[in-house]
Image: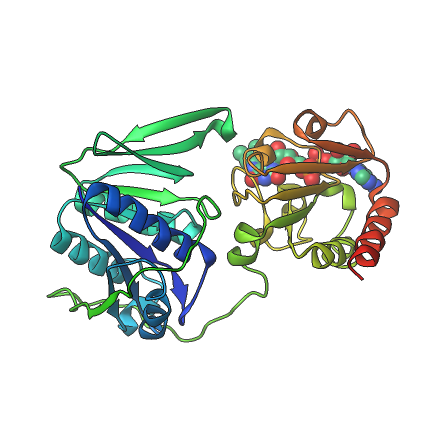
Length: 325
Ligand SMILES: Cc1cc2nc3c(=O)[nH]c(=O)nc-3n(C[C@H](O)[C@H](O)[C@H](O)COP(=O)(O)OP(=O)(O)OC[C@H]3O[C@@H](n4cnc5c(N)ncnc54)[C@H](O)[C@@H]3O)c2cc1C
């Protein structure tokens, strides 16, 4: 295993910060393994994004502007990735640990018979072998998974795990040929986009999350959104809030929702059930606003503000806005 391949997730050429984090890290790993850093960009907007990626320390960016990739099927992307990986030989493939990234990774693991490490937050090279570090059981245990050097290895990497650093001599851009003998049945009639998606929440440096204690949908707009805007963050929620229909499920954080690890996580009216905790426990600083000082969230928060969210949050927002002004 010498080369490193980054799967670039994007929509019409708009990508996430994690792409540039992985491009930077791919170079660092490939350098230690004595190989090259590749990226694979597929679908509409791929050529434009490939140009942007040349500002990062990659050796080759492989591009295919193939409309089949934009049909919400996984197979077209997996076919291209498999072809690129087989051409490069046993490689480490870095995939963002997002909802769609995990789907792609699962199929690629089966296609390549690869080893896999999921939810990776660090990669180390030990004696020429790739060791992937990932938290398990909500961060209670930290595991190190060493990939077999002679095989393909896949790591799904948590956003915000690495710093993005432009640099390098400018990657070569190469067109990927469509894998032979492939055809796909899906046709897309129309697209519906939700305003707040995975990108904002999983990569936000600050997350303001609300729970059942908010009592309805309105406080998410009138209380949480202004605080999130003042702090440059995104709004998230507990499952109780999503189940009640107050927010879309795309905002749910936890075991059956998203995993976030922002610099600052503010939980408002959230009790801190274990299923919620596993999705936010690795946040750098956790603040809880809860009228019950004995709520479970107090056990793993850095600061607990005991009181009524409807009094505390507007005051906090005002103070932050004033300090910024
Ligand atoms: C298989 C499974 C998977 C699950 N997955 C998830 C998941 O992914 N994410 C998730 O979040 N949950 C998940 N759950 C649900 C989880 O067990 C909890 O039920 C849920 O997290 C509770 O949400 P909550 O904290 O918003 O509500 P509650 O537990 O009801 O807590 C509300 C909190 O608000 C406080 N409060 C009330 N009024 C105010 C006020 N005015 N000001 C300040 N504080 C106030 C209360 O003191 C209380 O602590 C899952 C459960 C199961 C069984």
